[in-house]
Length: 381
Image 1 (cartoon, rainbow, N blue to C red):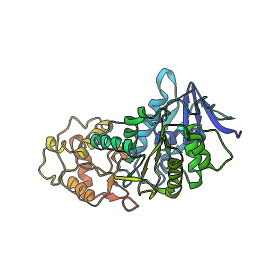
Image 2: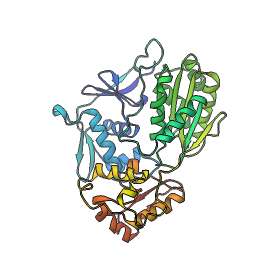
Image 3: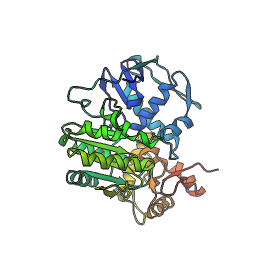
Image 4: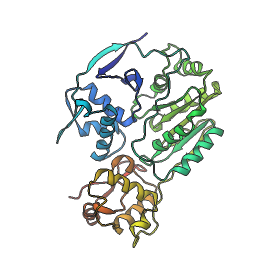
């Protein structure tokens, strides 16, 4: 059996090939972005990795600001218990980046032993970093739909919240799958041929010399499980081939996928995820009126999480920002508020008025590089 590289630090054991982090031998729930950051830092333990490098590794196809990185580094530190009982893992070097500062033991070891029933115990769903806003009805509808249709793809532009919704739907239905629900992040794969291996590693399937898709189907044959294929857009063909083969061969498996475009596979049901609700005419709205809209609620929650004085200042709305936000929303562009902190979603309330007002004056609102991708804010010149 092939050996694979693992990293041990404190009570933790990181297995990058399986995208698994163990704490005292038990899987630790960690979001896929936070896990990407951890893998990058641990692989270069003791060295400072610039923010630009971390962002490029964690969001390879999307332009995001430093706020997104800070949110996920904070989640990583919380998961590791960084700062508790004198433990230090991730250090911030101001103006330079982040470094993993704990002693790390690098070793080559056999893959984690698979239990007698053939599946890794529990599941590996990433824990949500924040409360989900404005998606309750969609989550409930998709959970019901998934029970009737075994293959469902959530489609939408980057940053609109596909992964957040998929994880929430999976959490709502996973009790129906006796062999668990398993999250497979595909965003970091550069070779479509690795999709079957990534799925097998996430499920704890022993390495096999057989055709990887056939081997996965055979291994799953007697199981009842839900597989979440996240970020399929750059491996659409491989993901579609795997989904079709597994679903035809294994009646107990269901697949929930996320992608910027449909997989165009047999049996696929497509749900196009809409943007959060915005006011059609934001001019003259009071803060109370504005907060009835889910996009504004999300912005306020993220702002309060990152700006200490946000809640104590005047509750006013910047009409130009809100109008711009509404206009961009009508063009089908998504806002990466979930990951960019305050970027993208721009109704202004509370203590950030003095920050965003210059942006209104300078028109410093910009679309990202790819059509249908995310919308963010940049600093004025």
